[in-house]
Image 1 (cartoon, helix red, strand yellow):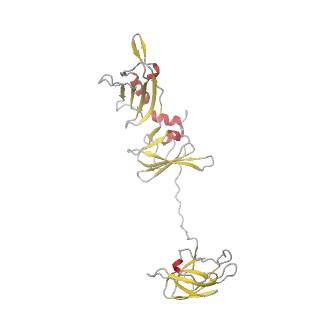
Image 2 (cartoon, rainbow, N blue to C red):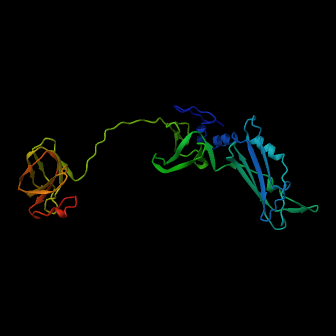
Image 3 (cartoon, rainbow, N blue to C red):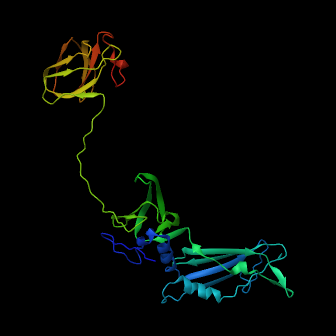
Length: 329
């Protein structure tokens, strides 16, 4: 079996950075086995009775600190243990068992379970082989990496479109609690580190994606607003007719003191009959009305930013207390 390993641009692969394990289930299983340093077996039944120091219904073992972590070493130690359990109704109860293999922080890496009924042999109650003969499996969540503040997984379809985003738990030690079902999937894991850097790695192969910085200038406008060029003394608008009548677009611009001429005619030739206008920088901000026709000359009493709204012959001058911010049409 070949295990593909890769290097991060800023974070080197080591025992503390095991994201290379994500490319296959075999690789993450190998990683999990190499983290195991302790294990336990427990037995229970509906009528279990805990009998003090002898009948503890469990067994536990740990590797010496100086020994290399290895799931098989822990299993060998557990096989040498004798477990004692007591049951009040062995004639009817199903007996259940569980084995867990853990890392040095008590995180489960592998697990297994068994069950069966006791039977009488030579006058004694004995457990079935299925009770304590375990097949162990990879745990549902495996702790990976260190120094992580946030992590998420992106899953993609064959075309590369994101079909699912899922945020992963990060434990108190900054380790990602990685869900085993994501191993080998089409997508990426994105991890944000304590130092502010990020790692983006593939879930299915040995790729690490370079994070590209892009700079762009923001250009935004507000729909429904026509802007007057700076220093202009006249402006022309040609609104599109609505049911044969002109709309009242909001017009805005920085105007100098003096006269400003606004020409307005719809695409069907309708001419406006006046303009509402106000200085938005004025504390009062009151609307004023200036009658006009094709060209409406508006008296600008002081320099400032002005808003203007066209009025149309069909409607006639309308009181601005009905104005809702979108214009009258």
